[in-house]
Figure 1: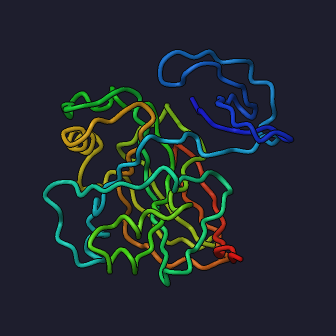
Figure 2 (figure 1 turned 30 degrees about the vertical axis):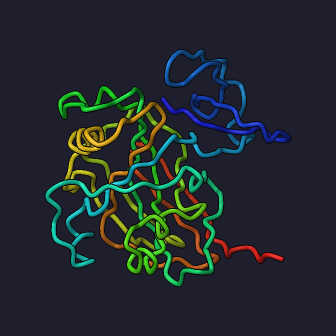
Length: 258
């Protein structure tokens, strides 16, 4: 099933919903506990898709594809490399990725995102999938020059708009061998299968939950394959995951301040 956040035409109020064929229905209640689906009676073209959720935290994994680690001359990690992105970085389908003036090299990173469905702490790998609510496409936008110059990745990964998520949460998805692609202006830049990940989803979730508690609605980014490349204002970035869908975002200049 596909779950969304959306706003109707003429209203800025975000609503939680579900998709049936090409129509949208609202949801009453808490998506991660008890909820009720209302009739899917609104054509999907009559709503604006928002980021599917506002996560409590975003935990990301670095260097999780061998080819990506090698293109940056990194050794293959023995344990997952994790870092945090702020929830303020989240944008949804069609929202602009803003290029901060302070950076001269901003790059795309297509990724599979996991949505946590229930509280997870010290979980075992064999139990990991029972804590997963669903999956999304993600773009871990990175100011590469700042990432390399700083001691930590917080600034390079944390600008507003640097975490597009969407287009929805897909609960009926098999993550073991799904194709990820990233295109910029329709030109293929990244392509890989999730089977190429160094650390599997169960091992990632077990490792992260040994460090911190994962709560319902938290998001885990599972790493990007090789092929990251610079973005410029006017570009259009498309992240597609077979079995989930396509996440599209334009790239825009930072607005001038007065």
